[in-house]
Amino acid sequence: MSKKVQTWSRTISGHTHHLEVTGEIVRRFVWTVDGEQVLTKKTADDRARLETEDHGSMLVIHSGLGTPRRATYFAPGEDLAGMAGIGGADLTPEPGSRAAAYERRVIEHPRRYALIETLGGAAGVVGGIVAAMVVAWILARISLPDIDLPLPNLPDLPDLPDLPLPDLPSIPWPSIPWPDLPDVHVPEWVTWIADHLKYIWPVVLAFVLAQGEIKRRRKQAEASAAQAEASAAQAETSRTSAEKAADDASTGASDASADLADASADAGDASAERGQRRGL
Image 1 (cartoon, one colour):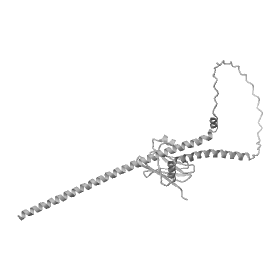
Image 2 (spheres, rainbow, N blue to C red; image 1 turned 90 degrees about the vertical axis):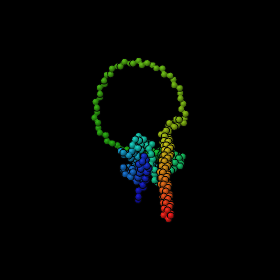
Image 3 (spheres, rainbow, N blue to C red; image 1 turned 120 degrees about the vertical axis):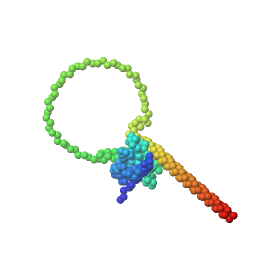
Image 4 (cartoon, one colour; image 1 turned 60 degrees about the vertical axis):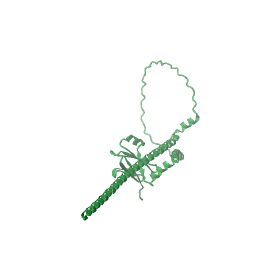
């Protein structure tokens, strides 16, 4: 059975970064820069951090089920951003791969992606509650035997003598007239949220993270499109310059040929004139 391979690559600041990830649970990461291998690492962490001394760092994220999500490069000066998982430049996944399909779904269907992530957070909360109820139900139906542990006979300790304590003088603390605070009635929905906050915050957190991921993907897609347009414009400029140089060279060659033809015609006329003079 062959192991699944996911690759990412992108040219950043004139250097081509390529990442290859092999495996499902324990993954092997191979990072190359301009064709030279700079790091190899094995880990089962879903948020794997790859760090080098000279080439910066990289954050590779997988889902809880092992599906590849993204690989983000951080320059050597972006250490704090790399630790927080913000900023950086996303590498481009291989076309047709699972990471490419995930990126396309996030960009093309942001609302559906946010809904799925939010429902996933809610499912995690409900699953935890159901699991706790099942464990409690099982423990309530298991009768554990009483175990009498033999205790050692401890010797009787003598009574400690009473120590006379001196009477301390009372301190006349000043009486501060505090104002009567008004009774504040909290709405019932606020009380309900406070009581169930531990169940609500994972769902809210999942929604906020989903929105942040959508904005991030859009920003990275716009940056990649702008980089592609700049590369295309540079290539077009280079091609136009080459075509212009070729046209200039062709025009110069044509002019040279015309000059040679004129010179040849002049030479023929001169030869004919010399012949006529000799005939006379």
